Length: 164
Image 1: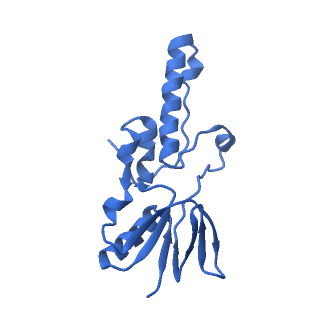
Image 2 (image 1 turned 90 degrees about the vertical axis):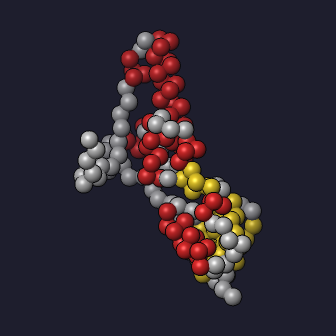
Image 3 (image 1 turned 90 degrees about the horizontal axis):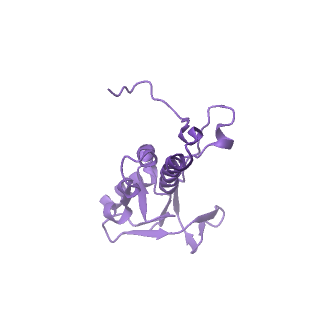
């Protein structure tokens, strides 16, 4: 039987894993956390709408069959010639590889945005941004310096979506 390895439990990785799990096809999914986080909602965690854990879904709640295996590890490399995924906990061989690792932030050419911003790159960073904002408000209550109240947001806008 062929060995399938999925690296990354973002949307693409989880969709592939859920399909394979549903069909009972054996596979291994490698991710640096034991949860999938809702990337498109991380701005809510950063803004304090809900606690960070509300935006995380344990992978084992989605993958329920014995044919699926979760390896919590950092992917450190891929040896295509030998069909091996190198991880922080050891090598994993594969016949088929589904490579679905992450994304990169976009700064839209806005000068200084990359160098001076806090980027939402994962659930932990969204929680840290919320802590930073709370700390700035606290500092304002201590010293009255209105610079603590200055928050600039940079990001994308979906022109098709209009919230009332």
